[in-house]
Length: 295
Image: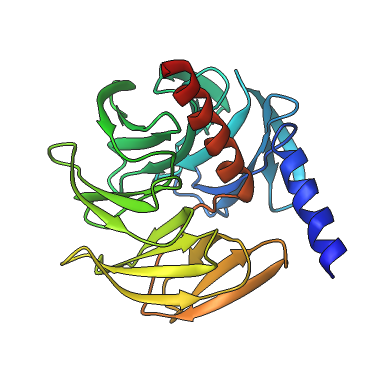
C-alpha cells in the first residue's frame, strides 16, 4: 500500500510538468424555440499539447480543438454557457472563447501564473487567482482587468457566493481563506483554516463556505456571517476538490493518493471546479522563485 501511494504521488508530481486536465460543462440552447434538445459540452484542458478539446457529450466525440497560448491550467464557463474562460499559466493571460463557434474572441493579461477562476453568478465579472499573490478581476463586458486584489501567499481556489457580493480565495501557502468584498474589491477578512487549503465551495444560501485542506486532510466549514470556522471535518488523504450538488445534503470531496471520495453532511450546496494536488506543488515552487528573486 505504501509503495502504491509513493507511485501515485510521483505520478501526480510528474504530471504537473506535462499535463493538467480540468473538466467543465456548458449548456448551450438552440438559437430558435424549435424542439431541439439542449446540448452539453465538456472542455478538456490539454496542457501538454497547449490546446482545449471540446467534447459533445451526446455522442462522446471531440467536435473542436481550441488553441491555447501557454499551458492551459484552469477554466470556468459563464452562467449562460456562452463563454469559457481559460487560464494560460505560462504567459499570464486568460483566453475568452465564444462557445457558439468555438472561437477565441479576447486574450486578457492578468497577474503572474494564473491558476483558479470563477465567474460571478450574473456573469459580469471573472475572478482569477494568480500564484504571485493576487486576484485579477475581469469585466466581462469589456474583457479588461478592472482590479488586482492582494491576497495571501499562493492563492489557488476561488468561489463566488450566490449573491455575487463575496469571493472566497484559498491561499495554499498562508493556510488562510481571503474574503473579498466584490463591491470594493478589497479583502475584508482572512480566515485561518487547515494546512494547504485548495478547493473551495459556497452553499446556495451563502451561509457556509467549505475549504479543502490538502496537508491536514480536513474540510474547514466557515460561517459567512462571522467569517469564523465553525467545524473541521476529517476526510481522506490529500483532499483537493469539492463538488456540492444542489438539492443534496452532502458535500463530495475528491482525495488523493487514496483515490477516494468523502462525503460530508450539509444543506443544499452548489458545485465548484476542483483543484488538484499539482496546484499545490506548482504554487510552492512559484512562491519560492519569487522569494529568491526578491532577496
